[in-house]
Each structure stands twice: as C-alpha cells, then as structure tokens.
Image (tube, rainbow, N blue to C red):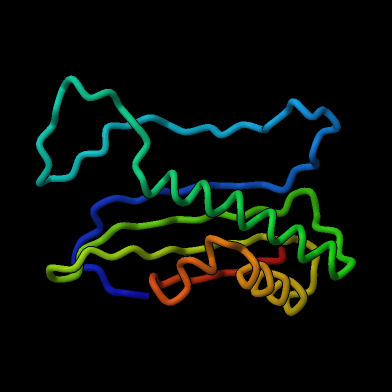
Length: 148
C-alpha cells in the first residue's frame, strides 16, 4: 500500500449479497450519509448543501459492481455464496509529497467456505469486475478475505 503523508478524504461502504426480486421495477437502494466534506485547507461555503464525498460514491459503485462479479464467479464455479457474505471497501484520497493518490482496501467476508476457495473466488471476481480492471496498476488495492 502507498504511504500517504496525509489522508484527505475517505469513503467506506458495506455491500451484502441479495437475491434479485422478481419485480422488474425494483432497483434496490443505496443509503448515503450526506456530509459536507471539509479538510483543514478547504474554505467552507455555507450555501453548499451537504453531499457525499467522491470517494464514498466511488467505493459504493465499485462494491456494487464487485459483489455482482463475485456472485457471477461463484455461479460459474457451482458455489452458492452464503446470504451473509459481504464486501466492505474503503477508498482513500491521500497526499504523498505533492502527489494526490487513491488507494483501496477490500474486506470480503464469505463465511463457511474454505479459505483457499474463498480467496480464489475473490481473485477471480477482481479479474472480471470492470472497476477492478480500470484501477489495476493505477491505485494500490489491499484485499482481506475472511471465512468465519
């Protein structure tokens, strides 16, 4: 992982496996806490409404895409993901010297599977997830897989 001199903003998400409902009108939901992202060096504009930081939006989009890829890989391999499987992603925007960098941490929880099987699923999901592909080689990504 890249060492940051300073973390400027951070976005965390928690995404769970869910069965797609039979209704074609249901699109799921995203719960975002609206905040006014302010760092020590930013000027606060009172007229600006609270909003989600870009890192949280990016983490949310990536986690939704990634957990879908994880489910697809599991189906292809004939593995049923436990209903309490989840993906937590934290995306940080930091500064190292004059450079501004992103990094991400994944905590993937697939309870009940053998550790080696879970790790293979997680790796395969990163190979097909468009967000993982787009960021590969561009930002540091750390992955932790838990099966308990």
